Amino acid sequence: MRCPFCHNADSRVIDSREADEGATTRRRRSCPKCGRRFTTVEEAVLAVVKRSGVSEPFNRTKVVAGVRRACQGRPVDEDQLALLAQQVEDAIRASGAAEVPSHEVGLAILKPLRELDEVAYLRFASVYRSFSSLADFEKEISELRDRQSAALQSATTPPGSPDS
Image (cartoon, rainbow, N blue to C red; front, side, top):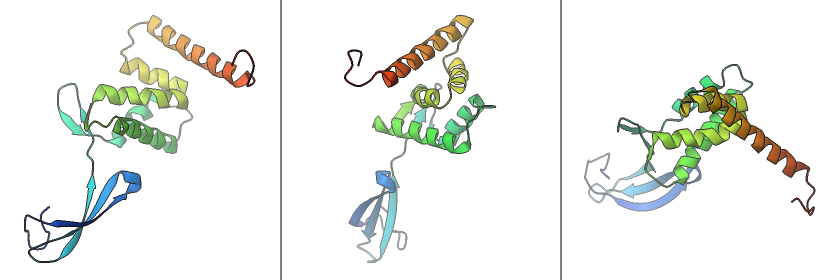
């Protein structure tokens, strides 16, 4: 790391600490040439590889913008969109990869969006998965109904009963 004062190309790490719940690392450094100290903040860069092969940094605002279109006219507020974008970023970072295909970002959006608003989920999934017929919508709606029925049944089945 280059010293910001004398521009020496070398520095020594004195102390390292995690910040922002482990998302960044703050390092206290010392320059062996001028003796001055400075702090650096390091953050792991998460890149998204688009279909064209171009790589760009992950951008939560792009996730929010895409999901906002699907949620247009739905009872979803900005805080919920921000939380969804955070969940998507957390899921992608949990994979441990420095670069993820844009397809993985879309997949990471689907699950929290389905839990947030089913209509918005259908809108987003229809574009993301390129629905081409009414049968595609019917299949997805059927899966949503099955999932909803299973959730209702598990919620109403008392613990310890033969069905649980």
